[in-house]
Length: 360
Image 1 (tube, one colour):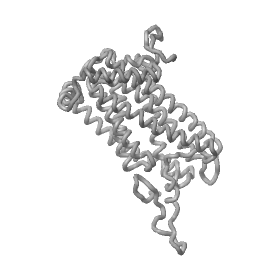
Image 2 (tube, one colour):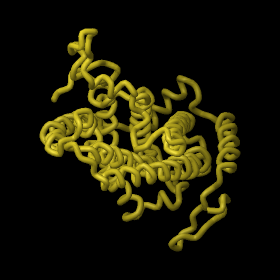
Image 3 (cartoon, rainbow, N blue to C red):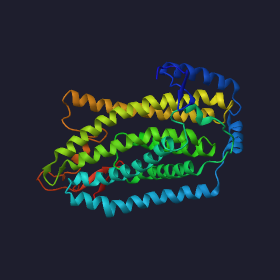
Image 4 (cartoon, rainbow, N blue to C red):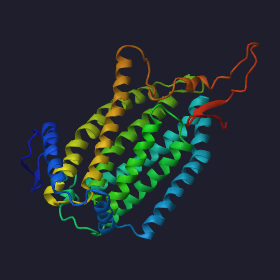
């Protein structure tokens, strides 16, 4: 990875070497200007025509999406009630952690499954999208068939993000970045839906692979934070694992989302896509969403930097989620009036911006 775009040999196949940030920025600038001059679907009416001509979604696929979205929601409710919460109580977690643990457990299970499948597609099948990102647009044709293995990945991920929009509003704990998270889910669902409809599914698998690994590490770290203090005892192993997870999470966030994502995905979508498919449909729409995704990755990386700074300066002695509201712990304590009696705030916590009673 020398920052050039010369041709490298890998497995007997010629692939382009990874570009550098400077080449990405300069190449993107030239590509965007050139695309603007030659744009054939710019404007409302041309865009509507391009949508009709190139987007393909069958009624069966739409029905499967909604069915699976409901399935994920009901499966989460069932696992929370019958598996995750009983485990949390059996392990005697702190009450505030009993409420948060099922959310992390659910996401940890899903993202481990989804990332494992993306890893299989990219490294244990015939696809070479990771090694040769420009190849995601080779042989592209409007309405081309989608291979079954990639269609399954899209159905799983698309329906999960449909569920996640609902879950962020009504199921997850509300955090400082929840509004940004909601926007992230909407953008991700739009990317998944439209990339499938326009048959840009190859690059979609690469995007999912580069993002899901961080969610696994984040939820793994949070689970160990919840489990290190339980039953009135401190568990060193969980503390060590939470620290290891936070270090690994920080490193891979930068490596996957701020290094590989722009230099592989954005380079392919913004620059080489025009070389493979001149006047590629909805070029500006997809690249705008991908760059928005990059900006959100930078935004969340600032939380990681804040966490590291707090640890280095001694403001934080243990791993915690800096996105949590500081008041979240306070609302777990019973409110008392001037005479020392308990007020009506007992047993409540902040969820989705609203005080809701705990179901304990």
